[in-house]
Figure 1 (tube, helix red, strand yellow):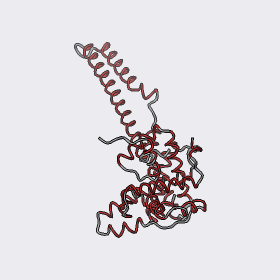
Figure 2 (figure 1 turned 180 degrees about the horizontal axis):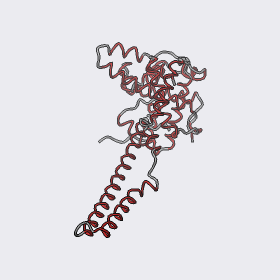
Figure 3 (figure 1 turned 90 degrees about the vertical axis):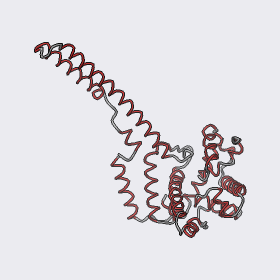
Figure 4 (figure 1 turned 30 degrees about the vertical axis):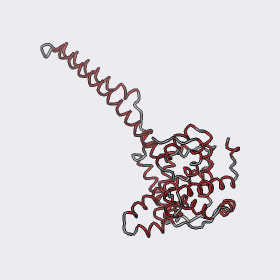
Length: 150
Length: 175
């Protein structure tokens, strides 16, 4: 939880707050967790990511209202290569660079399709396609097949 | 009037929904669709599992012991206070038991009894039975009023619970 929060926010104090908010949400909504549908680790990580993105988006809105907006925004959402488990790293590496870039901006910066399109100067439809294809490739690379889902 | 999206179009939005980057009408339409489409729900879960795996596979950044202790202390304080935990706070509140439910009526009956006995012994006022009857009516009205207020409180608590639940979820339910 702390790791994903720190990767997204790049600020130890904010990440600490996100860890607290994540545990607090887990305390209140633990009954919603269904082990048959997701692993506990993935569930916790996604809650932490969600809370971190909330904070990042709030920070971004604040920065956009200030003179340092452009500079701060650039630093906050800059995608960067990150290590991960070998299988996932391999799957990520196999993605075309433009798909990987769009996915990074969505995953680590929580940018919407439109925001990614503006940032990369690409048509909105292109960005939607890149993200969809990238996610589908990752899903298939990690062994999620459609026939196994039913 | 906008055209509604087809199943295939909505299915193509699932990766973005898992990434929590959908907005506006697309998010709304997909949220409604996933509630009724088991296939899309399962597909959405699989995308989330991929992303969860990505998140858990990131190189670990150490969480300093001092920060961990601070978070632990703050969480225990929040849990201990109970007041700021909507679900826990409201659910753990003791529901009115038999005594609570009937205590008011018992007191009212006792007061009416005392009043009647007192009147039958001392006859302190003219038209005492009328006065006693009026007081009994007032007590009855008070009882009805209390029941109405309790029903309103229950409705408000229910509303608070649903708002708290909604706040806890992302736009699409995590599970």
